[in-house]
Figure 1 (cartoon, one colour):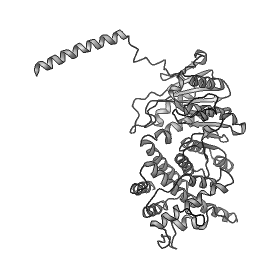
Figure 2: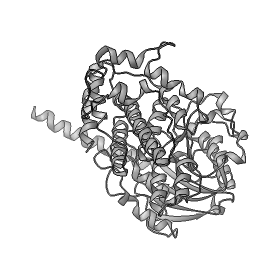
Figure 3: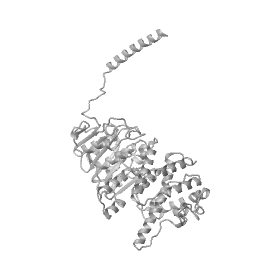
Figure 4: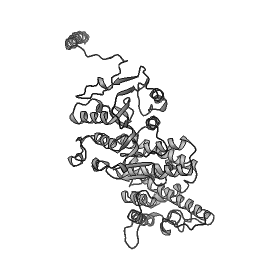
Length: 490
């Protein structure tokens, strides 16, 4: 129903001088969708208040409501073109910065100052509109987009489901575009598998301190939503007191909030903050969570001032996040975390110390070894660490995901690829692609945990240097003979 609408919006944005990339398209679509969602939410809340015999107090002042500036209607429901802003008037209304007569963005960003807390819809309004700006330069093109978005509704579960599906597709396309793949989009079949293995329960608190587009949080929400027929109390628990995230980048934060809203979380508990700026010694019992699900960013270059917040100092972002996640878990808490496979065997002091910390403070139960190409546009091999905090590691079960095809844009990872892993994980069974190691067999000096399948013969054994030299000399002789033959024919 809405797929063509999204395509039409992208086509309009493509023609606008202010929008140049997929990132611009999804950012600009997001703030317009958010305001349409907010309008629908207010109308639903008003009806609920009337049915309960209460008066409803609108969040948004009259002149900034969707049905006043964006889509004023005639009595027959059609657009009132005499009242609908367009062209320069529309752009001025949105962008204006004037304390006496606020533009739309200026008005909305002030909500953050007056909100009662970060878990309120008012705070989300202020945070979102403090972090972005309108990039659409043509008021006529914006008018076209507003007319399209007005046909989208968030009233029924089926409407929300379709919109969330299409929004996820936009995030995926943004990831497929290249350098943003790992930052914004972790393959959903992988996330669903991680959630299934960790198996959160209603009443658990679930956290991702590098949540990006909130893929782990929305999949965990869907998993719990489908787990049973929820009571009113359980539904409220999922809405307000289950899912928590943090994200440093403005665009990712906005996309994450919008993604959770479209999946049914009314006021997502996502904070726009630098997770690593918190000293982990300041994390208290009240801050700790039951479940951590995350794919923290990879890459070196973290400054010394941030490293001072961690006992194991390193410039590798993911290693700092791993320390943070371990600290954030309650005793008995569980985690499923994606990390570069080099973490398992790197010989530098930070890697060795971090592996020691993980093995001694947590039960590292499972290591899932993923094939290259799992993350489109990101050329690194990764593993997933499944662990439980509170007891040291005794045995580790490894699973090597060995596929019969190369992963790529046209052949991405799917849930069927991971089905055998999920099945065998229940009993930690041995197979041609799975095995168990006893921690007593690990070198206690370097704690090397590298993935090496004992059931798989080394197809590329290390060759004797003399053999290599002999083969080169043989090839040189053959090449000389071929050249001699060619010259004789010229």
